[in-house]
Image 1 (tube, rainbow, N blue to C red):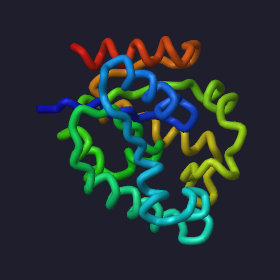
Image 2: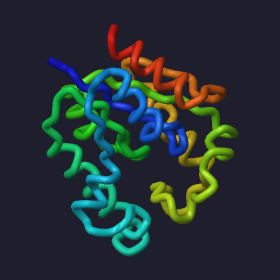
Image 3: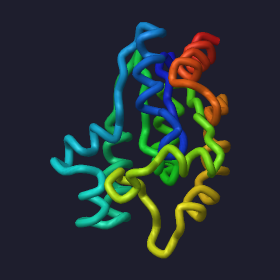
Image 4: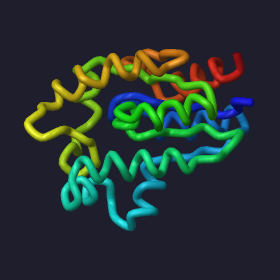
Length: 166
């Protein structure tokens, strides 16, 4: 039984913020995989990327995801989770995957703290390159899509809850 709701999407799409509110609406637990990675590594996501590199971060993220064995939970993932087919297949086996979509302009407006946020951007890439690369991957793995460009946290959370119930 896939009793979890898995949130994927760009940085700033509201996976963590809206996920907590949706979990309350659905009477489910809430789990943030970014916090799990930080807990395992003992340092912030940005520190992992800065000191150990992108490849190490991607492997740490995949290892953390593959260890997940939870039920009745809204799971907020890191934006880069979609780079690992193994991670996404595991998450798909755990629950319904909802993609919180943001246009590029709205993403840029929402992420002011890029240098400290722990966003995985490959060497030589721009934020636009990252966006364009990830967009088809989010669409590929999602069971449902929510357009979050003009929503409040509560509106997005209510849509997550509605999709989770169906």
